[in-house]
Image (cartoon, rainbow, N blue to C red; front, side, top):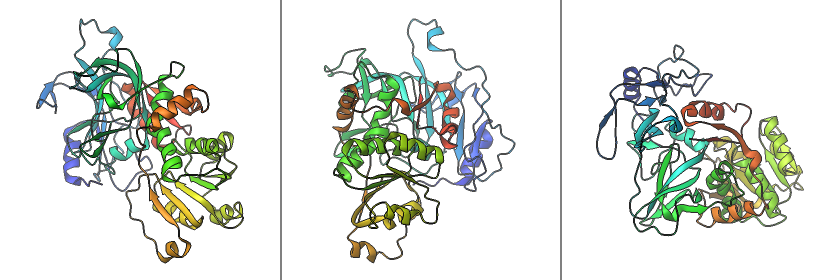
Length: 428
């Protein structure tokens, strides 16, 4: 995690009317929606150096300051947003909208930026849908930064589907108009680079990515469903089939049945886990888990939650426990509800310390803690093939669609669980 000085963020928010500064002492509305404006002469970093753009559109958040925010608007105010692309009477588009986070200051905004050209081996994709994920919220709050990118402007969004628009030099395996999803990880120089975390992502009208990350989408699959496969579906798929190596008949429990855990329940049913116990404090989430394949549901806030889980597994606990939330209290609950020789799989991002009072319990019961991140290169193609054949169906997961100009509303809906969404998508 990268900590940002409060004074720097306060200065940034004071100099930029309409931008928000949120303190570590969180208000009843942890994530407020900023003012949307078109400015004059707003400066923006680019690969070619600083450039002044008279038509910048920005709304955003600056996290980490401790100033009051009561006087700031709680809903977006839109002024003179750029016309839609279809209404622009230009021979050739040269600029696009992109939702960018300044990794140094924490300021987030939608800006007009030059449409990028692909370098050799890369491809430009016209974005048709891009998911909104809790990882994005962690990025916005300064709780998460990429290993390879910790400063400058970054376009967020890592669950992307669209159409091939322009091929970089040396790319001959794709054609313009091909329908594609973009795998989360790019492997380079022995490292893993995450789209929307280590390099620019899909909260934009166009994105450039390595050709090796493209995966063909079946014609029968809508863009919005295909977009959530990288990460929201492929992450639990790999956590279940690879990191945990769940076998048919093994007992499992899933903490957090939201945008990722919901798909974990469906995948666990698909691979034959039994029983499947869904653990979530929201009644709506528990009801949804039962509809999608869970055998039992538990409220983790109940005093006897661990005892109830053990009673459903003959008193021993579950063979595999998954954390799709990322909080220390839940991670302790996972271990308490696990059977001897059990595996606990941490998938949710946790920026807080974790303390195990009696670590010898892990030795005595031979339990394991395994971390999981993203998925390997085979996951997305395998899943898209299964969806194309109708073996899996995640169409009910799309809970809302938002234009890029309303990204702040999508973020707020996810943060406050408005209508208890599974996955929200941006449609540029």
